[in-house]
Image 1: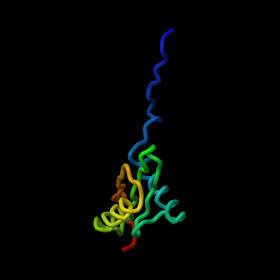
Image 2: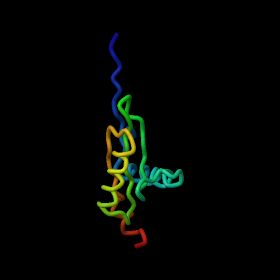
Image 3: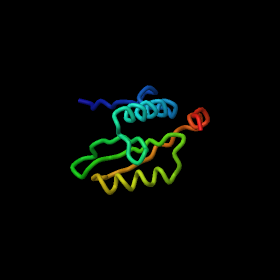
Length: 98
């Protein structure tokens, strides 16, 4: 009996544009649910027995210092295993009001 090998189709991979749309949706959803630390929205997932994985989702008006404060607060308050930042796309930054 030969093993079945699953081949990746184009639809299996998320394009950069699809990722930006998905994470912009996640940012807005998590803001509605109050998942905000130091003014920066975030998403959390269980990373295993060791703790949680966090994705900071800053908006166009946030600067690097805002993200650093949010990351430091999560490291102090939660059991962080992995942390990542998803900055808004260039088009989101141009369209947002200042």
